[in-house]
Image 1 (cartoon, rainbow over the protein chains, first blue to last red):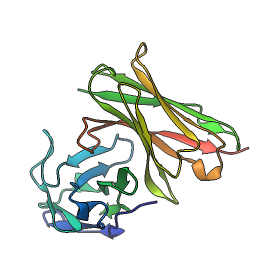
Image 2 (cartoon, helix red, strand yellow; image 1 turned 60 degrees about the vertical axis):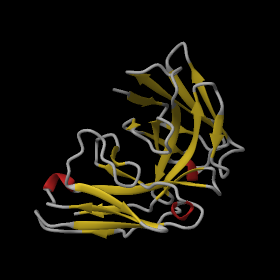
Image 3 (cartoon, rainbow over the protein chains, first blue to last red; image 1 turned 135 degrees about the vertical axis):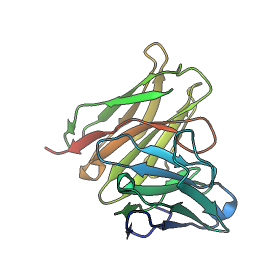
Length: 109
Length: 118
């Protein structure tokens, strides 16, 4: 059911930078809809990390940043910390579905 | 600060009906917001189920539309999900979530595991 494609996993050492890609199509990201990013950690409610492709909600550390191009987007985590180990999902809006679509998810270790 | 908490039976028999409720606190469900259901299963990843506006207008994922109903109970400040004719494929963690209307989900519940099994 996932319409947006992400790499299954990325890894990095503490302090390093990792980037997660999110590839969509002309009915979602390519149609001009924003990309949003969520962090899923065990035992916790999913957390909104980035909205509107590159905006951080209050309380989200500045080491998380987002970008968007034609039919894809990226989430960068700079200065990787142990607490960043989690699953990350991108999300957009799709005109074919008239609803939300999610990425396949990326595990960061 | 919006807080959401799902509740449900945990186990449903095949061909039965799944019913989940999301209790909302920190905001009135009658305010200008959208209330969503999302599920996560090993086979399908994250799947958007549908959303309802405070007025009662609902939009559903076409793949589930024939079996799903989302409703709002303003007196209890909660909203609910009903899914008919469930199969093992409906086994998943079900999340309720809030949207302010800009197509992203800013608050989520912790999730409720629902298993379909006899």
